[in-house]
Amino acid sequence: MYVSLDRDRCSGIGICESIAPGYFEIAEDGSLQLLRDDVEPEAITEVEEAVRSCPTLALTLQR
Amino acid sequence: MAPTSSRPRADDSPRRLVIVGASLAGLRAAESARRNGYRGEVVIVGKERHLPYDRPPLSKEFLTDGQPPVFLHSTDALAGELGLRLRLGTAAIALDPDARRLSLDDDTTLTYDRLIVATGAAARRPSGLTDLAGIVTLRTLDDAVLLRSLLVAEARVVIVGAGLIGSELASSAGQLGAHVTLIDGAPVPLVRAVGVDVGRRLSALHAQRGIELICDVQIVAIEGHTRASAVVLSDGLRLPADVVLLSIGAEPVTSWLAGSGVAVNPTDGAIVCDEMLRTSVPAVYAAGDVAEWSNRIVGGQTRQENWSNANEQGAVAGRNAVTAGSPVAYEAVSYFWSDWYGQRIQFVGTADSDDVEFHELSSGHGGFVALYHQEGRLVGAAACNGQRLIMKYRRLIRDGASNDDALATLARSAGAAWERGRVTPAKQSTGSSARPSPAGEHAGRRR
Ligand SMILES: Cc1cc2nc3c(=O)[nH]c(=O)nc-3n(C[C@H](O)[C@H](O)[C@H](O)COP(=O)(O)OP(=O)(O)OC[C@H]3O[C@@H](n4cnc5c(N)ncnc54)[C@H](O)[C@@H]3O)c2cc1C
Ligand code: SF4
Image (cartoon, rainbow over all chains, first blue to last red; front, side, top):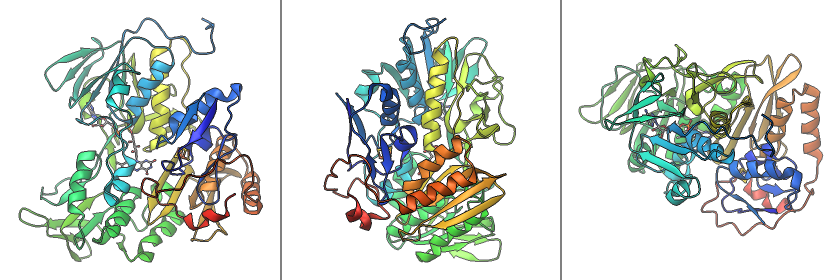
């Protein structure tokens, strides 16, 4: 499973980072960086929650 | 009791979950009930006739860029994937908790096994104001559509209340070419949200953009025959106005619960919940802007009016309403953002502190971080264009970090080159759907 980010939608609000800091981080310029895009099995719940919580629906989980 | 899977087992007794309020908290509650294995009926009753939509853009891009509203889900997803029954354009008008029955404004009733109240808040209007065309508030999509038609170039706009939404509106109206005057009743605006020091500093952004902010005045009257034509202030000043925009806060929508026995806070009408989001009445839960709850992180009753609270609290209420046995406590470090004049303002935690320390960010653009301390611990952080730091502070606050931890994070960030991890290539941004990126000029530095 991996996360993909639609940069055109993302507004850098950072909800994803607060939920799954190992996967998402807001950079100096305010844009979101994916720290890794392959989701480890033990982190799936956390990453799913981050994906769900994004206000702009910019994140998706893909198999 | 012990569930065989890692998911909490859904209680098979409730057959019908009813959610009042078809917005963020209500929808998140429904999704979470399903995620937690609940297979029964879910009915969402919503007063507005629109599909659930996102409110934050209404004071921002919806006004300035003429963008369509952002809906939280499509009708198909709501009915299909989530199996929800939506009763839009319908308001709940009374609750009988003994009969477990709601009365609706279309003269029907609806029984429930579990009920979640997510009726949010409504824009406050000062009492005793005459009702004139051109006096508006902003809470709903319909309000925003009206406002969008009024905010034309050269319109004289007086905004009453320089809080987060009032400030966003000043920025948006200014961008649309209106002549804006912002007034606030307090000597310094935003104190409840961010404290005096940060309130003062953020409020200075208005003058920097040529928008006049008049503090410490009240409105005495709004003049006009059928349309508003001027606002008269307590210091005698008379401001000609085509549009008077009232943004003096919002009140929990709970008058419809009068006589139901659901306990509300006597000062603001918020529904009083315990840490599991249960109200004083069996089988009734509440979440979102309408609810106050016992937040262990803060150590007392709190109510939050922001997107991430409705998002997270709704999910916990939905889970707790349908799962038997082990309700979870909702604990949250507050987080909100606000966008004015292309600046991203963010706040985490609480402004209730004994010391606030400012740090200027070297990235320029007047960016800063303010750290709020209480007895040697970090309890809050505000940032202007400090997106990179704010969520780190949210975690530090949740973990009860010390002031030294907070400073170490700042120092690490200031020195760090931005090279960690794998970065997917940025698509060429069209700029149309993205929010203004305050430090967008720096994009070239990223790698
Ligand atoms: C203009 C604006 C800008 C904002 N910007 C930001 C921002 O930048 N960042 C941020 O963090 N937060 C922001 N917020 C706050 C955020 O939008 C709210 O915290 C969030 O919408 C709360 O969600 P909720 O579901 O609890 O309540 P609401 O979104 O208020 O929804 C409650 C729903 O219940 C319905 N309802 C009420 N009474 C009844 C009844 N009796 N029967 C049936 N239905 C009923 C209402 O019509 C409404 O649709 C903003 C809010 C506004 C208005
Ligand atoms: S939560 Fe969504 S919008 Fe916010 S930074 Fe993450 S991906 Fe971007």
